[in-house]
Length: 96
Image (cartoon, rainbow, N blue to C red; front, top):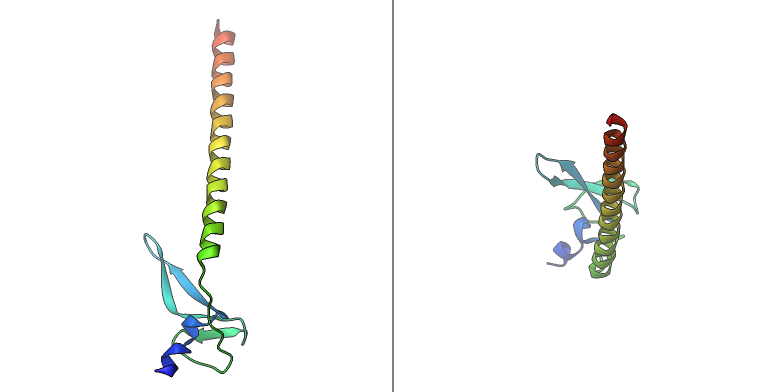
């Protein structure tokens, strides 16, 4: 049972690889080991295992970052729409 605890997919040095599917990214059974600097199987084990910490804090940071990006995109859309409406107004005046 202790062997199951020290699997690479539970290690903080392991970054899983994903491949692009039709609708989402699908995880595969390989990943990058930052400690060994090579690709490893997610089910393998090694002596350099380090427990992965919970990532609730990083999820909050990610949510805040995405919120900021969405706000910026909304502002850019508003600017583009204003420029488009001004251009249309100028074209209407020039046609008269």
